[in-house]
Image 1 (cartoon, one colour):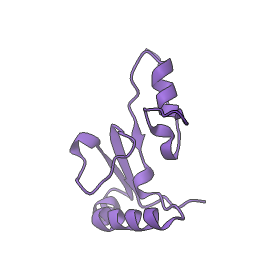
Image 2: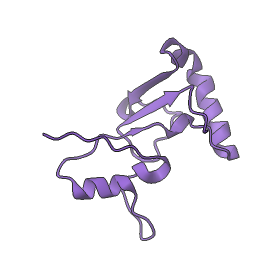
Image 3: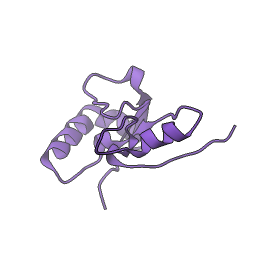
Image 4: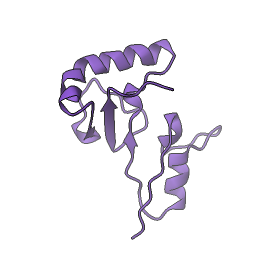
Length: 103
């Protein structure tokens, strides 16, 4: 079996398409005979807009001590996802990190 890693950002992880857009996650599943296992790390990315700044800081406030105990980065399967974590791209796993500032 061949294994692949496809790295994408923002909404490109989404597995569903719309009339206006077909994200990479949708294209990957459409073109491959096996399902993708997706890991979303956007939850704690510190984007410039107010919504993401506030949401990321709230999540980091809730999980900061746990993240520090794990050298700053940890994740979990979405079936074990705490209620306060959004899963906008229907990912299989969520990654949280203290090191998500945009450069």
